Image 1 (spheres, rainbow, N blue to C red):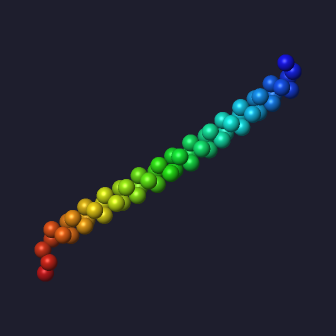
Image 2 (cartoon, rainbow, N blue to C red; image 1 turned 180 degrees about the vertical axis):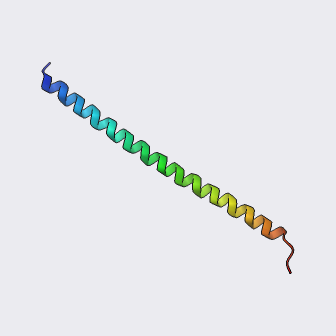
Image 3 (cartoon, helix red, strand yellow; image 1 turned 60 degrees about the vertical axis):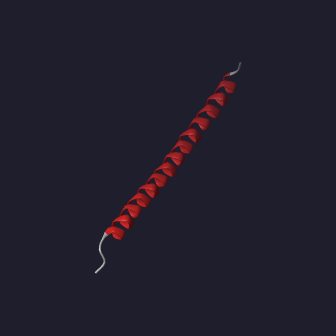
Length: 57
């Protein structure tokens, strides 16, 4: 096959790899945001339960 064909195949492969890395970064960022929200919710729940146990003045 011609060199042009293999150059095109290489360019397409590189483009797909680039979009794969971008997609992975997007998923990682979304996962981190979810993790932070879950941590904040756990802290909020712990504080709420401690507030209920504290005697009122």
